[in-house]
Length: 492
Ligand SMILES: Cc1ncc(COP(=O)(O)O)c(C=O)c1O
Image 1 (cartoon, helix red, strand yellow):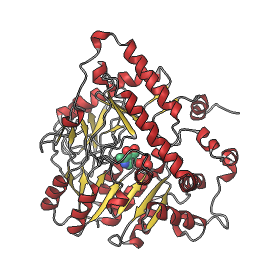
Image 2 (cartoon, helix red, strand yellow; image 1 turned 90 degrees about the vertical axis):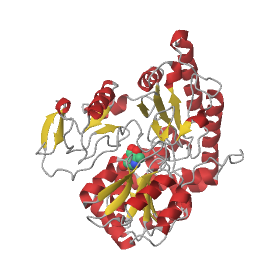
Image 3 (cartoon, protein in one colour; image 1 turned 120 degrees about the horizontal axis):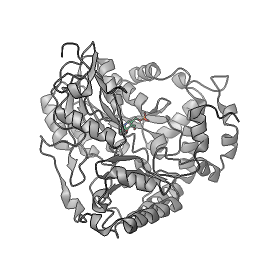
Image 4 (cartoon, helix red, strand yellow; image 1 turned 30 degrees about the horizontal axis):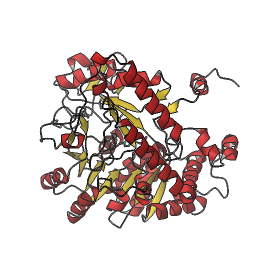
């Protein structure tokens, strides 16, 4: 085999680390366990195009239509659409369907960059809804009903409301209440459930434990109109495959289908669509077993981890999706980045760090042994830490959740920004000279892909400090060139 290409070489060199990052299937073992060896072996043969019998994603009347109908039944929605440009494509299509050009959208300020791209493509004006802040973790919580009500009062003409639930850290919003309120105002609710494709099934197959009342509600059950699910993030399909669910009759279906074909590639990958089919089949036939196992593994993990105050995992908060494991490394006397490195040295890879938080993303493909290895590695790290460096354990976590005062924002968003129209023409200037200038191309720490500064916002000193800190910690920041330049408006 020719491994001269560096991407191929890199991939071929990977030898089975423990994955607590995307995608949710966690590798070939998972598919083999459920009998998909032939598909794995014949992958190149399955990389087909629209030959007779293969149907067409944008005029689905055959095998693709059947899969979409089975997905709609599984999620109990009116229609499901396979997506081959990730949730990003579904988000673009949903916003461009629900909001006519030039109109307003109430949008969570901690939304994914694809939502901000939709604003630019559709010349849509945002009205920002700000998330709660979870203390002492310093991460964004859900968007409260009160915040949605504030935005509805500020923008009674807005066509729709868009928010992520769960957000990157697993915090969900009170979607049933929000959906009722948004619908009462005659608007469309779009939920970015990229991180919560599993929630509908967590609801369906609860493990034996009685419900606590704190469990998140999926956007499908809550009654949202358009729901975008990254099946690849937590479930069993390949990276870039996703699903858009449509409920009710508030959304113009013909327009949605037109936007979907506008946004997505004209060569949809049959491998991606087949992986969505596999995920569907797995949930239909082994859903109860797979989801119950996953929930039990999580329960076991939290039970064990909570015995160690140094680990301080986020838990017990209303609407928190426990499939995201957030370890607060502060009690270990470490930053999230340091804990990530310590775990990598033990062959365990996490998804994201932010400040003192390290987020480990579980998926349907994680095995009990993955959680055991993670627990073992964390215990080793506790043992290896010099006693003096251990921080003081944080107790009473649930009480530490507090609603953000309007002026207090999550760390990724330092202040409410004043929005100017995004500049049409751009020039590049050094990052260090950009304070006070109008941002031209979004500045986006990746992951999680939430813009720190959007086009049209004024770049602040705090933003510059944050960018420097994020890069120093080893995370990428999109929108800043290799020679540390940012794009700003021409007049600045
Ligand atoms: C909250 C959120 N929404 C949407 C997306 C986009 O999903 P996809 O990668 O499937 O395009 C992401 C990606 O990480 C995300 O974190």
